[in-house]
Image (cartoon, rainbow, N blue to C red):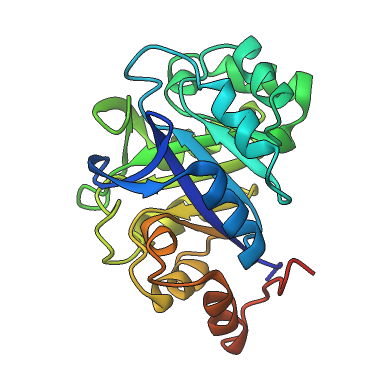
Length: 254
């Protein structure tokens, strides 16, 4: 197993970090710059920031938010939310993002993944997939988890890889904010279907959930939000736990 990544996620709304349950009932979790600085100091391997209302509001990700956070991070920084064109993708990189996640727009215009990879390299292209588990079927949802996309998550992940995506950010809409564990069935199905890294997202509630996602779920990285935002689990604590159980982690980003 390669060294895994621990990734805090900053869900943004009105300039603040927020966290909800099932993409709804948002709760304030702090200032994005202060959160970003803290996570870098605590040993985060990467940081993700999602402008969670950009798509539903029909606008691009706020570049001022990206610039403010990018100026204060020392780890790879991925940004997503509302990207509809190659120009918007490029603007986020120019604002300081290292990677850009595309979700709804990629479903509607799959060529955007190919265009972005051709211009900037697959390593900067993240295909974000929001999916549910409906009796072993994994339908994809777009527009902030509200609209069925008419795609299967496994098939879409494979297609996204073929189109040029260098990574999959896979979020369980059902598990988001529930703290009852990652959807291991969904995560494993997608991870086993592609060669590119898969980030598990949605449902972390305790230390063992991360271990399960990395072993039973076969994820390459684990993303969480509320557990880190509200100091229920510290990143150093999580890395020590995983290391004791044979999972390769970076200690102090070394």
